[in-house]
Each structure stands twice: as C-alpha cells, then as structure tokens.
Picture (cartoon, one colour):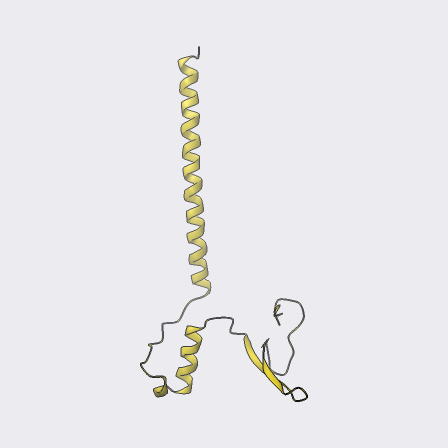
Length: 114
C-alpha cells in the first residue's frame, strides 16, 4: 500500500514531465520561427515586380528583372555557352565568377554539379 505522500510526489513528477514536454514543443516551434526570421533578415526580398500583360512592352532591363524575380537562384552562377565544331554540338554549362576564369574544383565557390 502506497502512502498518500508518495502518491502526491509521483503525481507532481508526472505533471513536471508533462510540462517539460510542452516546453520542449514550444521551444522547437520558437526555434523554427527564429530560423525563418533570420533567413528573411539575411536574405531580404525586393518588392515584387508588377507582372505586365505583354512582355513585348518591357524594356530589356525590365525583362531581366522579371526573369530574376520568377527564377530566383544563386546570382553568382550564370550560363556559359560552349561549342564543339568537330561534332557540331553546342550548349550551356553553369559557371560562376568572371567569364574569363574557370570555377575552382573545390572550395566555397565551387559548383558541384558542373
């Protein structure tokens, strides 16, 4: 037979465990929210460019701005055209940096899928 004092202690321990679980859930929710806010702070988005009805009325600069808004990605990566006259083939590869330099094979500026 358990004493009433030990039963109240066990109940209190269960209540504390339940509260700790609730606090852990709240902590995870707050950490996720914090990461979202930090991402927004570090990567501010510009005001959305209005979408015109016809693209033929846009200037080249407006077309580039519209393209960049619709297809967000890494601004340091762009396409470089290549041609193989022997085989009659051509295409584009992703590259970064100056068009006069080749991307490094390793390091923070490397393009792993290139």
